[in-house]
Image (cartoon, rainbow, N blue to C red):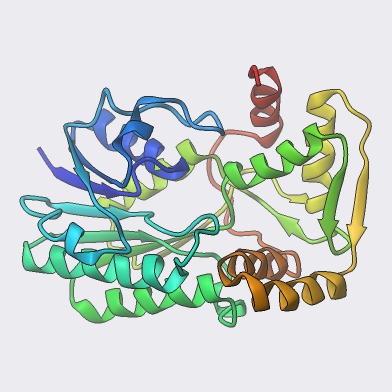
Length: 292
C-alpha cells in the first residue's frame, strides 16, 4: 500500500485528491493548518474528508520548522499548498515557494519517491505576477532536486468560478475587460483523477482544463441563469484595474498580489487540453440549490 502526503488537504482541490488516493487504496496523511476544516463540506461543494484520512499532520507553510518530518515514511508527496486569498503579512513567496521548498527538502531527506505539484497554466506569460513567479521558483527547485516529479498546470478550478457565482447571487457582476477571453475550468474531482494518475506516469508537466470552453462573459451568464436572475454585467476597463492595483499596492500588498493575478488572467485566453466529464452548468445548478 502506497503512503501519500497531501499538502493543502483542506482546500478545494486537496479534498478531492485525498478522496481519490483513498479510493485507490492508498494510506493518506493530510497536511493542513486547521484540521477542523477536513470535517465539513467546503464552500464550493468540496466534500469533507476526515473519514478517509488515515493521519493528520498540522503545519504552517509560513513556519518551515512545522513541516519537518511531515514526509517521514511517505512514498508520494502531492502539494497544492498555496496562498489563495490575502492574509496580513503573508506573501506568495513565503507559501508557494519557500513553504513548498521546505516540504521538498523534507521529502528528499526522507526518501520520497515522487513529488507532484500544482502550479499555473500559462505561467510563462505571467511571470511578472508575484503569485505566479513564486510558483515557478518552486518548480525550478523541484526540477533541480533530482526527485521524480510532475507539475500539474490547470487553467482554473470550478471554485474560481464559484467566486463569479457568489457575485452573480448579489444580482450584479463587475468583470475586468470585455469578457471575450476564453477559459475551460476544471472540476476538482476531474483534476484529482489526473493528479493521482500522474503517480504512475513519467510525465514532467501536464497542462489541463475542463471539457467545456467559455468566454468569461458566458461563465457569468451561466451563473445568472442558474440563479434565475437577469444577467447584469458591468465591464470595467483594464486601465481602471491597473490603476486600482497600483493604489492597492501602496497600502495592502497581500491584496495587490491577488489582484495582480486576477488582472493578468483577465488579459489571456486560458484554454488547455480538455479532460474530465463534469460541467460548469451542473456545478452552478448545485450551488444554486444549496441553502445559504
